[in-house]
Length: 97
Image (cartoon, rainbow, N blue to C red; front, side):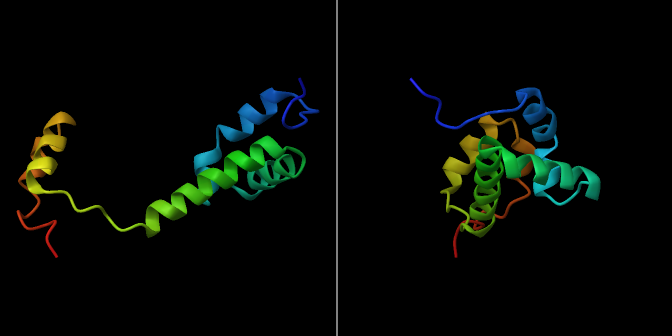
C-alpha cells in the first residue's frame, strides 16, 4: 500500500511549524516565521492541505449566517455549556428578524 502523499522530511518540522498555525492564519506571526511556514508548505503537501482547510473553514464560518435558534433551545444550550449568565444578556427576540 502506498502513502497518499510523499513526506521526504522530518515530521517534527511539520508539528513545530503547525503549532503556530492559528497565529499564521490570523496574520499575527513575524515575517521570518511566516516565511519559514510558507517555505515548508511549498515542499509539504500535507501541511498545505491543513493550512488551506483551516483557512477555508474560517472564511466559511465568517460568511455563513448565524443560525436561528428558538429561545428554548438557546436556553438549554447555554445551560448545558454553563453559560447561564449570557442568557439574560440577550433580548428574548434576538433570534427573530
